[in-house]
Image 1 (cartoon, rainbow, N blue to C red):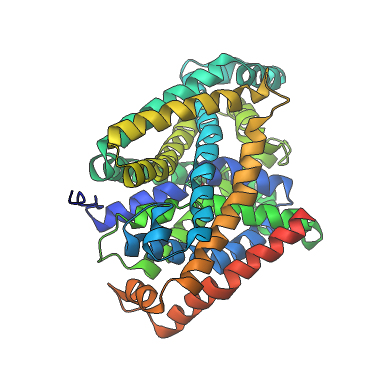
Image 2: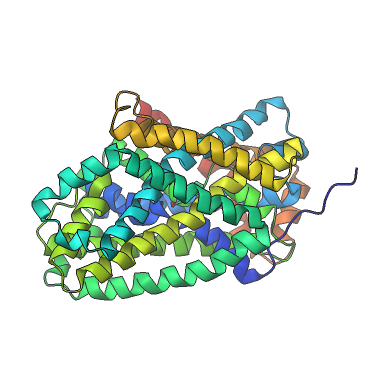
Length: 441
Ligand code: PHE
């Protein structure tokens, strides 16, 4: 039977919107501020940015060239590019990571939906700040949180069934500009708060005494998570790029935009946190407990709160879509089942896993799948996966194939090309290894 023609993104804007849509998500607006807040602010930001450009950009290029040259997702792209059996490990690890991330991601994304409703019906404004923690704890430990995660996964499933152009691309083209507009409005509002400087100082003034191996490992994990690296997401998306998409340029654009949005999220959150005398080191509950306290005291708080959680929901949606695409592409490529079937099966499976993740805050506290999945996927599987893809593209994929792919549509200045290639062959695999071993020790 002849292979069905592979789907493609239709426009240049669509490629950027979908790829940046994948990168920009809870990682930027929920995870980055709390990691930064608990890991000492400016110092974390600095190391994070170093990782994004030293390891991140080469890894993105490696994933792009693997995906577009093979026109397959994971693990098929390795096979088609002439990898032996051993390399398949990285492909399978990617699929496992995709299931894990989707499961806890859907839970947090579900919380954003609850918070949109709470903003509209005035609950955020009306609950006294002293009761906020108890209310949040009660909500996340119960079935309310599970049901919202399911709702989110179903919305995701419906879009996925629409396909690459009519689902993913169309939704990203609408949602990404919306997200940017809301961010800018928030930034202006935050910068106008009294005492905003303290927050900005916390974010931008590095205190090098805060740098520990743990902080470095977290910054690396955050860079991988935020850029959607190391689990084949960008391999899969690149398999839908047209031959005209310039890979190096696109990867730099994605890294810059993603970092910009994480920094903007910091600029939104830290001035507000300091202005209202709260602690930036609240951890994962930072945006769900600390920010509502601030909205509670703010003029027009319900509207801002609603906007903020719409922002988070939108960002999460375009990201979770990209994670499910890894799984759906895997099922349709490898097992030749239809897109609809693949979406339904994977959605149901993730609904079950997400239920356990969500109830990690309640009856399944001991199992704690939520934190385990987060730690294993972002701090272990993703860096390992990124290392695998870079090592493969840098050392095993034929040189001609790599060069042809990277230069297909655009002239890359030789200096930049050599830099990226050096990054793929040496800096990324060795860097990940060092930080990894140091962190585990
Ligand atoms: N990059 C996304 C975020 O920042 C999360 C993600 C991870 C998406 C892995 C795809 C793959 O939220």
